[in-house]
Amino acid sequence: MSSQDIPEENLPAEQGGTHVPKPADDKHPFADPGLPPHEHRIQDIDERAAKRSERTVALLFTVSMLATIGFIASFVAIPQDKSIYVFPIGHISAMNFALGLTLGVALFTIGAGAVHWARTLMSDEEVADERHPIEADPETRAKVHADFKQGAKESVIGRRKLIRNTMLGALTLVPLSGVVLLRDLGPLPGTKLRHTLWSKGKLLVNMNTNEPMRPSDIGVGSLTFAKPEGLEEHDHDFQNEIAKAALMIIRLEPDSIKDKRELEWSHEGIVAYSKICTHVGCPISLYEQQTHHALCPCHQSTFDLADGARVIFGPAGHPLPQLRIGVNDEGYLEALSDFDEPVGPAFWERG
Image (cartoon, rainbow, N blue to C red; front, side, top):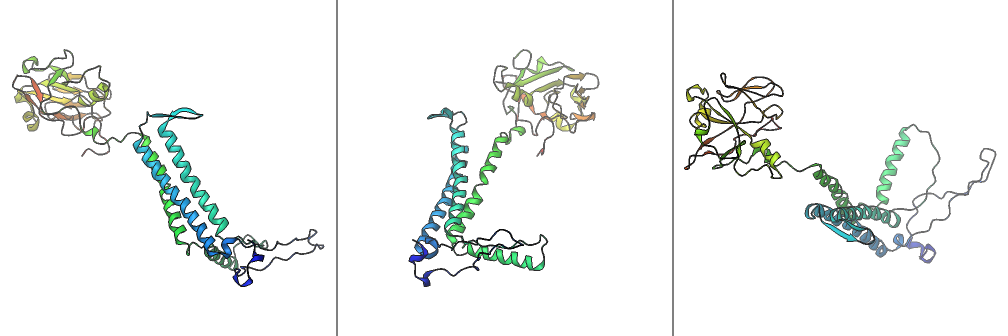
């Protein structure tokens, strides 16, 4: 349907003046052909057609929102190791396929909706404008403001609320795809830095003999290393767990223990401290029997094991965490709880 088939009274009012042809002259050697007559679209003269276009644009934006939600759901629900067969590509990662498909649909439908909106509902009348100086004089600024208002009016964004609301919804949701991808920077630590394998009733096992320890196995002034019951070297997570749960077992004369809590958490002078240095996490292995000092070989942080393992030298920031221990009914040393604070180097919060 063209504008020639529509009565004059049904045609929209012209938005600007007609750019008429200009002949060539000495100043302008090429003739200005002018602009062809403007042809009105069906949406300009039929509100039902305009409504159909509005619904089409809204549908595209809605599909974009659904695709973004599908992207997030795929990232959360599909296992990383699941694969599917896609002809003719072959076997590919199901998660990658779903993420690429949903994100592509989300972005494509936003673009398609914007293009369809511009081609069917926004004003398409061509207007010729003369070149003007670059500087923004008051008249230019006033014209820019007027053009902006006119463009906003021609975009019908105020009148076509369905398009406006679905577009805002699509543009609001699609950035969530990028936010979700931040999850792939690494697993969230959760509370695993605050806990170890130690718990109430867990036996202390000698690292050298792999046997549970009795108080009689530990002589005064000796240093022994222990691990939690059930942790074996062939376990796939052994290194991660022992890095948090490794213990130093030292037997002191009860009268030489200066810290009240250390004495309460010990058994007959046997104290258990984390082996992991609180500076950068090196394993502590040097012990001076006469002074009860433990020395980290990496940066020489020194801890007084008779006084709550407080730092007396070096860069370590806080004492070694102590594990509360006791003896079970069978006479074996056991933990009475987990450490009451994170072991190893201080991290962003120690609460």
